[in-house]
Image 1 (cartoon, helix red, strand yellow):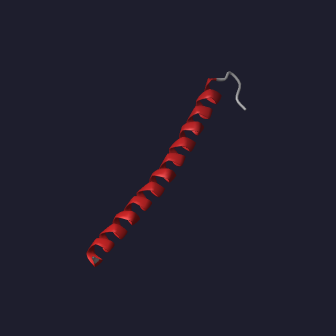
Image 2 (cartoon, rainbow, N blue to C red):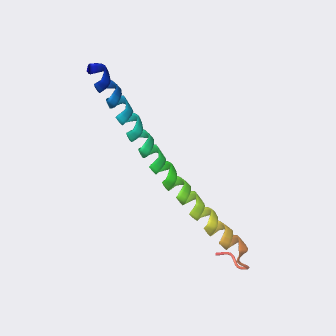
Image 3 (cartoon, helix red, strand yellow):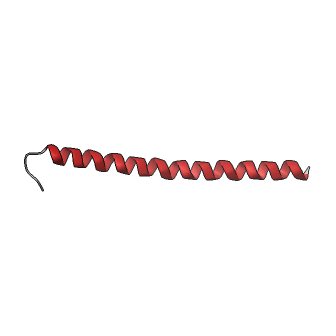
Length: 49
């Protein structure tokens, strides 16, 4: 029984860490995408801010 509990705990921790990492990575990708879009539109404009 102890082995099963340890395995479940490890699986739970791994899933939790992966979810957190993916959430952070998704936010970073979103920020980078927005920044690139803003730079792209600013670069297309005839005047510079």
